[in-house]
Amino acid sequence: MAAPIRVKRIDHVTFVCKDMEASRKFYADVLGMDEVPRPGFKFPGLWFQAGTTQIHLIGEHPESGPASVFIPEECAISRTRHVAFEVDDAMAARDRLVELGIEIQAGPKNRPDGPIQLYVFDPDRNLVELYSM
Image 1 (cartoon, one colour):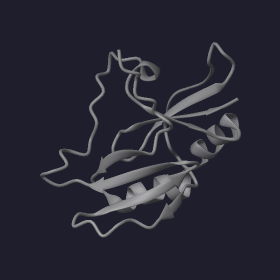
Image 2 (cartoon, helix red, strand yellow; image 1 turned 180 degrees about the vertical axis):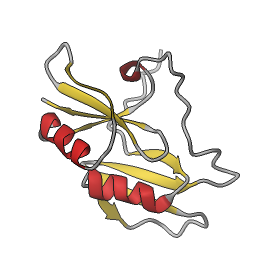
Image 3 (cartoon, rainbow, N blue to C red; image 1 turned 30 degrees about the vertical axis):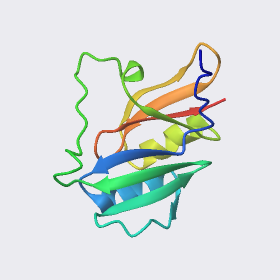
């Protein structure tokens, strides 16, 4: 039997977005990610650096599919698809989100292994977890 493929790290996560400026504000101004240069693709988008991972935003168009993510009401927020970002202090992040008027969807709460986690939606309802150790 051949050896399994060995994944080294997540290089990037891509989200489709409807309003590029609202998404820029969320990822840069709220989450503090640095916008980084993007190759000259023929479709709109933005790239952000989050540690060693990049967030690639693609403007909604026929080839990308819709921007909005549907999560049924009966789903437990922490148990559906999401991306998680480690932050310095989840409680301080909560305070800043409240100050900015960003609704917290779940948490803050302690994960069974210790970290504090909370969940918010980005402008296109992509679920984002923020956690700290």
